[in-house]
Length: 412
Image (tube, rainbow, N blue to C red):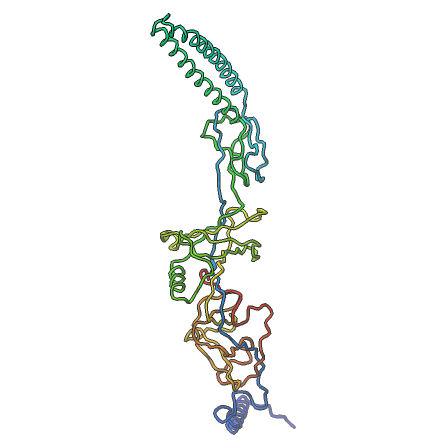
């Protein structure tokens, strides 16, 4: 008996029949939508989501900018006399105190100059003493009319010239001593030394030979720029009472911020500083206001020229609400969050934000105290009206509360 092989035409007909059967069976199933009690699948429990009950509180506000450290004083060390550089005494890059010896210049010539000046001073002193004795002898003779007035005047003039000459010579001695002291170059300030710009044996010229630099690093300056928009908004918020700063604004225009520094590895520098300067005009290069902070650097851990994140602390926003950053999502209409209604259903809520820090956004519009905001569980629950099972968020750092540990504006 011969078995018939299926033809291509029979295969096509079978496929069409099977597809038609699936379509008819799908049409007979009840639709899930308007007639369903919820958006959840039948017989499926409501997904468990994490929510945060927000509360308006006094919220610390931080402002963060990029800054660069600079020495409190940066002093050039120069030779004050001419001569041959004998040796470098200090170790390059070491920390020195004011008055420490740094360089030694050949002092032989200046020692000879001092000896010569002292010899001239001795001669001048002898002439002065002689003039004094001569004047002492003539004075009684003038009273007895035994000498002329001219002789008296000559003796007095000789004494006065001897005194003036003695002062001049003694000044030359002091000048010679000063030049001799300049042969030992001392540190003018305490700080960290730089590299030596002159090698041993170099011929130095007075005031033209830069030997090295010293930078005072304790305390340390931190320079940064505050954008014009931030400065204007900050001033407006302080004026209308939205923000307040505990300290008073200084006479030079700077705000009374407490300053913390975040290093390149993400760690926070242990000591705090203060903002002590704000420029009165906009920098045409950066488009912002130049500002400066001063911070203690007792161990020299910070070095001039380092790039850091400057965190300005001390401001507070009244009646502010904060939510974790992951709770805010982008939509075609802008930023929004999902809130959970009293019936445990998802309700989308557009929000307006003003800065963030430590994972928390500051919400200025769209939420009220007591609202429950969806924080985790977007994969399981993301449809408006969907029934959910809310579980309160367990805070581990204190940042995910109504008032976060700080909110950053500025360089975001």
